[in-house]
Image (cartoon, rainbow, N blue to C red):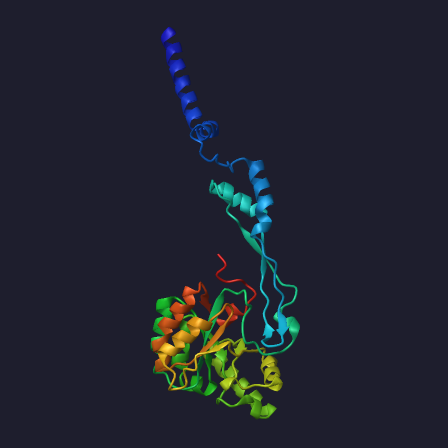
Length: 320
């Protein structure tokens, strides 16, 4: 009998020792003895909830409304975000984390682009941490495969604005662009200076290209890029009638000019690129040479590279 009591006593002592040496009390006492920081135990349900309530506002941003800018015309807004306190609590508890695992939910702006009527768009929101490469294609196919290879290597998507006549003659090449995951836009049918033609010609230029786009890709496009950036209010309205937004650019590589070097393009983009920029380029030999350097310069500024639709969206990109 005494032997049994002895065994029970030893086991009890072992259990107590294990509990003490692995408990918050022991850690607390050790921290005081060693004069180290006393940890906060988020496993305390009440303490965790209170800490989330206390710190949530520091992790939130208000939405930004779209606006009609005096210089930049239509500028899209940007979602805000607030802390989802319930999901933040659940995630932190589930991961047994010492740090709060913040979970957010978006808050839409009160004013969206569609609320401002028609107008040209030159850039995304200044707080959109991303830029878009716009590739206007109206002639040739020689440099497209190399461009696609670079985009694939860099793991980025861009927006190709296709001339309708070009697409009609190069359907296979056009399909390869979308198959690679890139966005397709409307660039008119015969590269006309759109502000200098009558409205019926504007309709033909935009409408015929939309028809070809639907035939080739089985869906409409969302954006119209006027050839040479030439437009007026009538052009913007005709594009809107086809449910297209009119997009220009923030930065022009001027790669169509033979005197423009790859080095100068990289330097220009590296020194001038900012959040929300739309960057214009074409499939030329100079562009292919400059692309890796331009992409590297953009990434060095911690900016994501995305499609026009993504950069002009209210959804924040690259925020975490």
